[in-house]
Image (cartoon, rainbow, N blue to C red; front, side, top):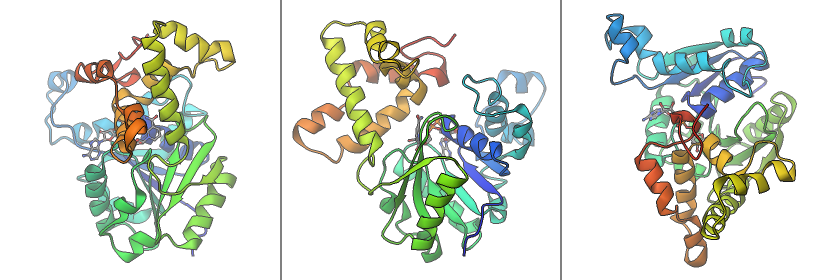
Length: 308
Ligand code: NAD
């Protein structure tokens, strides 16, 4: 019987993983934040004579994510002090430590094969009876649970936070056919009472509810309005400040989400629909070019806007 989450692990320390870890730390829950081991030394590491086997290098991705939590605007942490509740690690050395946690949240890239590999590893070390969830934007949770142990399947569900997790209220909770009723009801209550979210139970359909609608709207706006000759700035004014949404305009939203993640999310639906809807969910050619040039949005410093 699950009573409370005393400690959590977040796997993947990118935009969403770091934001979710911060949200948990803000409510006093200690978090283990794990990411992959870097393949190359960065310039500072080379200058300081470090090697790829040094722990500080192996933990670099999650460590830098924690450091950046206090610098981002809007800030994911309520106070800087909360960062002490987040412990950085890497997936090769530290995954066995997830045996101490009550909830493991997977927040790695939006790719089913990558996520399934991560779940195979998680299944080796997680505590029996602990909850495991995915922050996927729209990949089938049933497909992610396939092949996993019975205890894993009973304790597995989608918990889809929105970006930025500290500020956006919605949490979609997506059970599979095997998710235990007790796990689903615990997560819905925990989401409302402890995480402070508005929880909606969604079906396991492509992109669930909010992203099925949101991705459609964004792609229609991007394709049709640019074709009509409006500029990025004009479209952002009309879909942002002029209708009372100070920042969340079309192209700014795409920069915040990350164009790579957005393309994966649109593709989740593209691959599963037919006809007119398929046309809508196809990423426009200019966006593919931006991706080829690593114009991913805020995370790479350049998207539709250059990061100040
Ligand atoms: P991100 O690109 O910022 O971070 C992804 C993280 O995954 C990186 O830290 C990367 O090092 C790690 N990673 C890459 N390859 C890996 C591997 N093979 N094994 C383990 N880790 C690996 O992405 P994000 O925006 O944080 O998205 C993460 C998840 O959250 C995705 O499923 C995405 O669809 C979902 N999501 C994103 C948003 C958004 O607005 N960006 C919103 C809601 C949900």
